[in-house]
Image 1 (cartoon, rainbow, N blue to C red):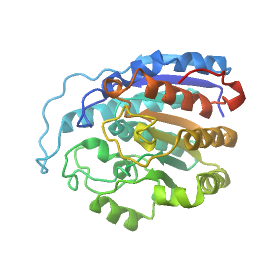
Image 2: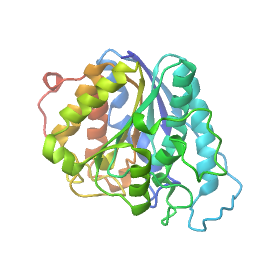
Image 3: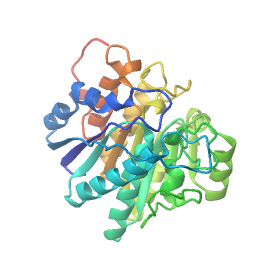
Length: 308
């Protein structure tokens, strides 16, 4: 794994129904993420937050879509910045922001992997598969669409055409527990690997994650991890506008992060859907920063005893 990283703040909230995600990057910094990475021996370059200019209104055949022009603008802006960051050799860490930002970050990582003649893989840690297209979403909340876009599914006219996509067989989703009918059909059609919470209850997180990481390693793949706050149970991570009971525990999440670090395969990371407006004295921001630190090498023995 790289020992240098770039933090890129993406204050995107246009894809979510609940305002507040634009404060996510600041909350992660306030929770001590840059300092934690430096203590672990990482060279950290904080690029600050990207800013999107006002966008002209874009019409779409689906009248339910919300803030479509902003999605297009953010996707273009994030894609270019993410691709340039990856080209430096440092690991990009994208601080969100709602999950619609993955349309830009993941598509850029797929393009960079293609340029390196390596396959792109995605580990999607989320309560939702985010596999709607622009026509199938009934809520119109565009944070429910990025995985369909980056895997090259139809129904994304108006968004930037992709020069590289992530093959559906190279996607592993864990923690899924809220799936709409259109998304379920897409999962069946594409063959994306899903480990929902029942699967995790039955077999734990180690076996499915180990199998996926073995696949990435065998292919010499580049692994992008996309970590949504709602992957976690809301009892430990309340600061998200899409709470779904029955999520991953504190211990399961840290185990996944430590396994990812041990693999040495992670080349980029999203931290998304943190809404500080919904937090309790910063507990979710602190937990998310701590999880990133675990992915970057912190162990249980490195943690000082403290109050929670």
